[in-house]
Image (cartoon, rainbow, N blue to C red; front, side, top):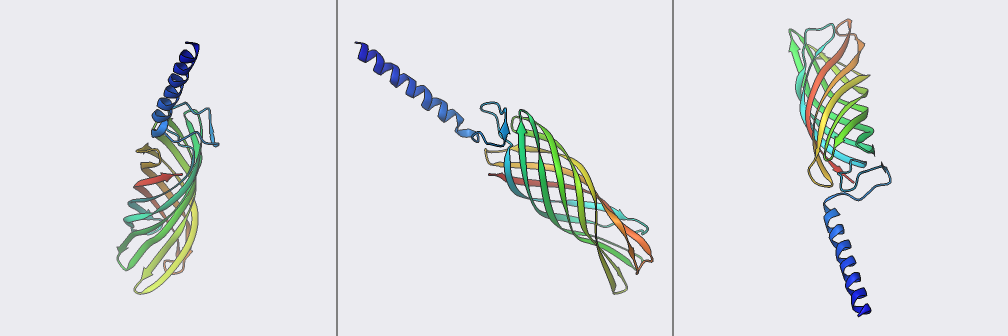
Length: 207
């Protein structure tokens, strides 16, 4: 009789453990870069890699051109999570079609990138964050077939929201303001820099 009761208890315990494990399959397992992560909560912690596509619009200092166009590229980052607070670092590199012509002048921004910190608050699989850091890129000038290009650095600041769609995939919308500092252009005889807003959509794969 005692053996029958013990056997039943073991079977019941194993069944409960199996059910609990099955319930957790929809979430990523606890990570070493997660601190005080609630059970059965979406984990934002760890490395990720993704792509993005958006639109940039802005102006060139000391010039009437207003370059705008489609921009897209890739990003890579790493998050840490403490409870509902998420913080990390992200870098991206973008190809840009932003350009504009005014009179004989043409300015374009063929590429740019950023290295930023991120800090946000997670409501399970929804992350709202602010971001800011270093920006860098190129500004090209053209005057009647004569060209001049400068690579410059500056700063960026923005905000975004990201939604976890599965344990490994997320989608985001993000706005950045980017200020690429001025450089002296021989063609214009002035200091020209590119300042622009960027609105983009992206997707990330979390490892």
